Length: 219
Image 1 (cartoon, one colour):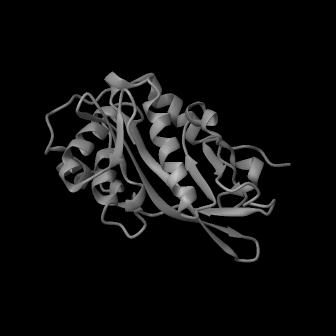
Image 2 (spheres, helix red, strand yellow; image 1 turned 60 degrees about the vertical axis):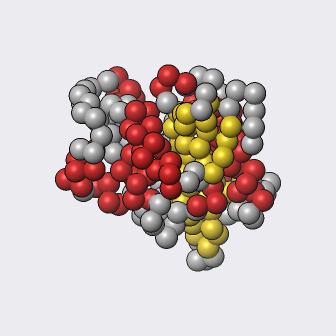
């Protein structure tokens, strides 16, 4: 996809290091001191839940400044019926190129691809302020929850086919592709391949903590 100011194209193996470096720049000190998202990108590509058909980068000025990747996940209703869904992330734009609509362009492009592939919904953890303009709503509105009837404030849902979730209660089971990121030593060893950066606290980390630990009460 070509636009006047950018190109959206599939990621290739030649792009891997550049995308990992981009992801590191985009997430460094945002949610925690340092970050692990670049390692997540690295290990995700070899996970069985990874969806290579939805792995895209955005180029501007001849450089990769944006990236999005997807994994398979599932919803399970009260009778045990399963519905395959998608989750995306990391979705990142280089800090110097943010607030230009690039992230929304990547998301819109790949959601169209996902719809054409037959997927009916996307369920994702994220900041609602970043995604409601792309049609994502609170998980509570589609009765999508974590096991135990838990409705996180940061759990967002978008139907790719209207009515796909049909009012049933669905338990969300995300991919385990990010499990290796819990190994702090592995993350640190991978991060050592990149230029040194200082870890620091930022207010965004407390905002993330509040959002990620808040739930919607259910009567």
